[in-house]
Length: 267
Length: 282
Image 1: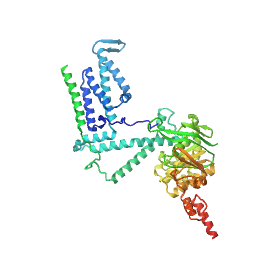
Image 2: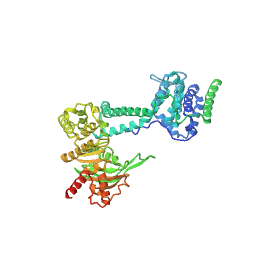
Image 3: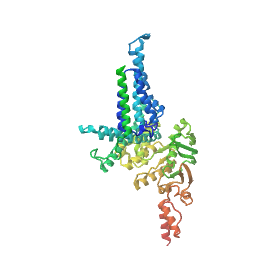
Image 4: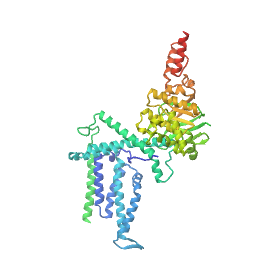
């Protein structure tokens, strides 16, 4: 039952997008969010949407993967659509019934917000689809490095993320094993109400926590015995390096944001 | 009634690129009260087989029938697995209750037995596993030593009074005294209650000492079934299967090659008795 949970959504590939420096992808993702928020007129979404579609095509990620990443958000999307539809009351009235009042402005606003949300999620998904979790943490660590001057624990945070990612599959496997062992002792995880079901998880959670702490202890010992003492003076096996393709990627984003701003100002 | 396994196959991650056949058409029958050893190289399908016998995994292909319960049917499987006590590797990692007694009572409680019956079974199981009730019952399972935890976990299964005790490497990680104690306890339970013991082990010595029947697994298939004499007698290519002879059998074989008249024995005790017998005759 626990093995069905997939971690992250990395889509293996070897495209230019996959090979971009993770720092580039992180910064571009944030810039893309800004670009999406800069758009004030509906039709200008054309460019931001085209940008996302372009990246998807170059990365060779099937569109179905991108759509799948939107699925968990379908309720939020529908909710946002309806709220905007009902709350906005500008323009002509289209439907008026009981307390419900739908206006042209409302329809416009609802569609606008929905497109914005879809683009935001697609943009961030594109990054996680094309970057392995480990290189993402690598990139984050490098990006946060300047902050360590102000005592911000950049290395520690990145190490914690790396360790967490490393142990998610291990803990899932462990949970699976313990669940099986307790099933063999007659545990029933499937029937009963919510409270009973929650109670039935105790025999799984207690051993799982015990083993997580044991593992943490052992890992700390193993790291110390290999002279780990934090980030100071620590060198890296894979050194992140900007290449020409990163420059092109940045340029494309400058172009997108520039175009959006100029067209917005002109029109 | 027996455990009947017929043409049992299982594939992990079916339909994906990582598909792996763990069991390929395995068939055999385990009768009541027998002591079985299951040996095989790592990844030969032993654990998958045990989980099928324990009713944790529904059979994909083929059938598993335990005491007449067909495990292909979910209802019958849930009912039938009460007959089987499945002990996973390192069972001490499943301990969770505040006290040893409560933890042992977990299984019988799930079986919805009356309170006095549960209490009696906890006492009995602890006695069988050599855990003094007065000393251990109110202790937290996390305060026990490794060997004691193992015994407490086993007691939790034994308290369910299974007709078949199925164990995945019950002695792994224990010291020699602990191994011997567990093995002898298992044999004692089998003798006294007539429940069958099916044990996976990497120790050929342990398997040879008590098992009357041995199943040899290799790459998901059943490579051989037989008595210790048949399995370790020299006709099976054990090395090709990633297995060894028990050390004393190996010694006996080397001595035979040198021309000494040593009968094939599979346990240290057997070898000791033989050598002592010879010494007397000299």
